[in-house]
Image (tube, rainbow, N blue to C red; front, side, top):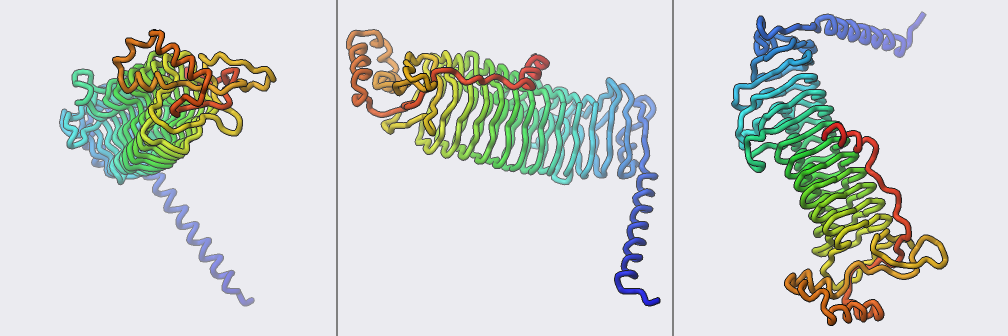
Length: 436
C-alpha cells in the first residue's frame, strides 16, 4: 500500500509530540521541593544550586540574604518566615522569568534611591513574575517592577520607612516600562507614593488601599491603563494623573486626603467614572490643561472646592456628577462659557435652589456656580473683606436678574434635581475597613 506524504508526516508529527511530552515529563520529574531551615541551611547557596522549576519552602525564622534569582523558581514561606538583606542594595533581585515569591516577610534593603534599593526588584528579565501575599517591611522601595512584562503584585502588605522624611522614602510599588503589569489588592502605607508609574502602558492598578503617603497613585507618561476600585485615605493627594492619556479612573475612593482627591495635569482622553471624593479635601478635583476627557457619575463632597478647572482645558464632558456640600462648588477663572451638561443632562448641585415645574428631573433654570464677584475674589483674595458689603450684594442680585452681565464661566444648562446614587464600591469600603 502506498502511503501519502500526509501519512508519513502524520507519524512524524506524532513522534515529535511524544518526544516533547516525554521531555516535559522529565523536567517535571526533576523539579524538586526543597525545605529550608534557617538554622541548618544557607538560603543563598540553595538558590544557587536549585534547578529551574524547583519549589523552595522556607520554614519560620530569619533567612539571610540578599538573594539573586536567575532561574525560574517558586519561593514560599511558612508563617513567620523572613528574608532579610544586609542593608545594601535590594534584598531580593529577580533576573529570570516565571518566578513566584509568596507569603514571606522581606526586609533589610539599602537606603540609596539612586541605586533603586528595594525589598523586591523585578528586572526586565523577570517577565510573568508573581509576588503575592508578602509583607514587604521597612525597605526603601517596596517592590520595583523595572521592565518586567506581565508581572503580578497582589495582596501584599507594604510598609515603608517611618524613620525617614517623606521625600526621602521610596515608593510602595514603583513601575517603569512594564507593559501588562497588574498591581492588585495591596495595602501600602508610610512610603512616598503608594504606586508610582512612569513610561509604561497597559497597566492595571486595582483594589489597593493607600494610607499616610504623599500620592496614593502617581502616573507619569503612562498610557492605556486603568485605576479601578482603590481606596486613598489620609494622604496628601489621592490620584495624580500627569502627562498621560487614555486612562480609565473608575470606582475609586478618596477620603480625608489633604490637598486633592483627584488631579489631572496634561492628562488627555481620560474616562473618570463612579469615583467618590469626600471629607475635608482642599480640592476634590483639580483639572489643569487636560482635554477630551469625560467625567460621569462621580461624587465630589465636603471639599473646600468641588472642582478647580483651569489652564485651557477643552472639549471635556462633565455630566451626571453630584457636587454636594462643597464650600465652593466650582473655581474657574476664564472668560469662555463652558456648558457642563451633555445631551440634555447636567449635574446635581446641592446649593441649587431651583424648580422643576414639568417634573422631568431637570431644573427649569440654568445653574451658574460662580459669578463675577467670585472671580474677583479668586484674583484678589483681599476683596473677601467686602463679600457682605451692600455694593457686592447689589452686584450679585444684578447678575442673577440679568445673566448677560456675567463675564463668562461655567454654566450647567440642565442641572439635575435629584442627586444620582453614587457610593464607594463595596470592595473599596471593605478595603478601607481592613486598612484602618
